[in-house]
Image 1 (cartoon, rainbow, N blue to C red):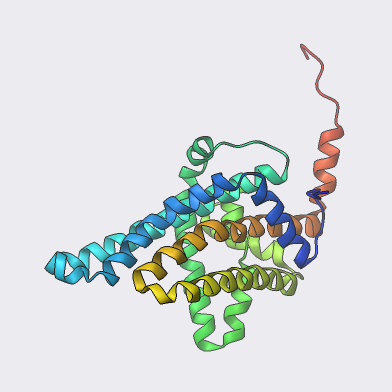
Image 2: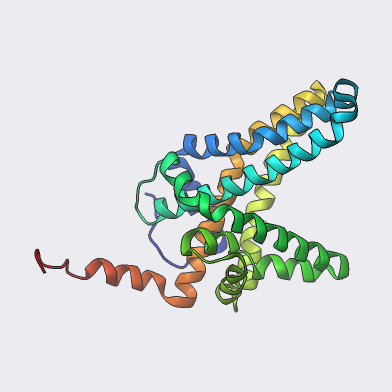
Length: 251
């Protein structure tokens, strides 16, 4: 029997809940991921196929444009997956078109916060490896804060800091587990496809990402709610709200 009740969860329980949510509507999540990966696949195939010989002087701007499109597509995908996974976890139904319209205004903030977070992670890794891991754990919920709470990019960092207070090891362990599982699946399949050449590796790796990567985004949402339950008693808040009587007609 599935257990998707809103509550505090262990690291493995968070990953298990993410898998359960994914299995409810896998095609929606795979479609979103496939659309986001499309520019990346084009870029990879251009590089592998020798784009410089085909495009000539235009190869540089083309590659830059493809990188930008990939980054924007991933930001939109992350925002939509966060919204859809949150709705599913709270027992609501969401369609892709409706969700995309809702999250589009938040995409610029998601992009900016992602750039800032990656920059801080890289600085932390260069200066001291543990510093980068600390940044990952402290600012794990910036995208969720923007998409689900409507904060701005800078406020999202403060919000994530509040949610991760005293939970950084738990947050890091959860993120590490889900990413390790993703990379194991990706590397294993890529090794099997290695006999077919670089183009086949690119295609197969993309297929694995389309199928498996959504679980990473969903797990981040479950982890966000796990932190809210632990820090704010969010499960009690939701339960209390559901027990409040509806306002009388004409009141």
